[in-house]
Image 1 (cartoon, one colour):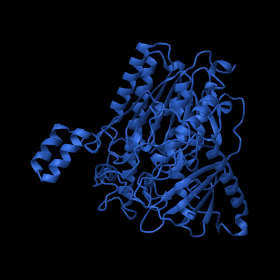
Image 2 (tube, helix red, strand yellow):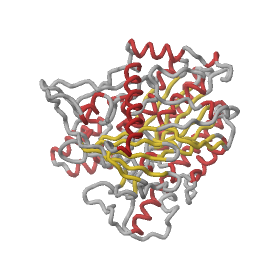
Image 3 (cartoon, rainbow, N blue to C red):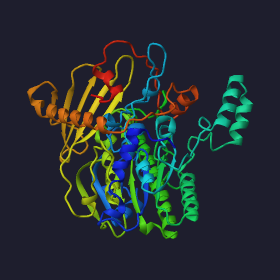
Image 4 (cartoon, helix red, strand yellow):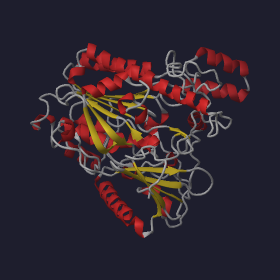
Length: 536
């Protein structure tokens, strides 16, 4: 675990100023907390959100026993920045992690530049409040080299590939360099799961989390637990195990199998046969049903141990997935609703009334502050998320809010595209610009056009019709500047260019990986400010 820096220590002291025992509404003894993040899960493909297929019976039951937020929006459309938001309660321009290129920057002398990571992490606050904290994750972008893991007593990656398991990776690289085809085959035969892109990691992740829970409670039965479980099996390749692979499209006989979704020769293209696209979506939905069953198994195991009734459970996702609704596939390319509308389900027996459906706009930025509020803890200084605990307890209605989503998109030579979304209960305003070019915008009415197929108005940001948008952006910038001034600043260890092995691991599931950036001595402005805080 990292040693807190002075500002971080102050933030933790502030968070502890209000303890569980001092809140008359809170429990006499802190409950356990379980946070499950299901990667790549769009909310509108859950049956509890009105989807036509029964993809999520266990999550539906969890929502029925507690509460479901109807319009929760992610801070970005990919894993790294959105999970930073989950853990810090800060939007992207608050915590500062907008792109993995931050880990490749160097100055003119070739020295690595610091990563501008800001914020106090959820397990740091809970750990200081007496919680034992265990985290179990399944993808590279949640590794400590990207700043994660602070505050956890145990933080482990499951679902390794041959790229990420060092002893095998080193052998693989040596054999490939030598052109030893037979040796590579033998290595793959020795470690089949590591070489199988369709290997399902949810069961082993849940098993390891349960092992940690058991061992920790055996050692100290009275300690409250914070358990974070990250599940990756909804992500492409869309290859759920039987019977989930045929659950929603058993009669398909075509060539689409859920694999090879992002490669240059992929059959998954915008002009693909509609029947093939239908099957691709059915495979994605089968993956949701598979992971739903695994979440159900985790909850059942906790129930058998007699601790579920004393556990605050939250289930969410970091982003959604595109199926050409706006021309793209997978994610990290846009901020339309299919990419940023995510589930947020909360259950806490005896404290949150069952069947509560909460409208209004909420965000992943609200998740950590809501946990603090429900536990009677104060959020760290600089937090921009809201404590929605009073809403969950039925003491207040959710207040109108604007949820910010942000994306920096390097999609070719030259400057990146900057994208910003302003989401409210009724409307989604999308803004975009390449580099320092003028901003273009569009408004979408979410009630009448939930799929955002027709903008109510398109505009340029400098036009009079956009005066209200400019005012909103100005208020957001002011709040972000204040937040960054108050929040704990910290080092994010492990910066420096990603290795060829790491780039290959990212490329295997469609991430091209960052190119190194060398900063010039030119004045910083426009999109370059993305790397020093506000992305817009």
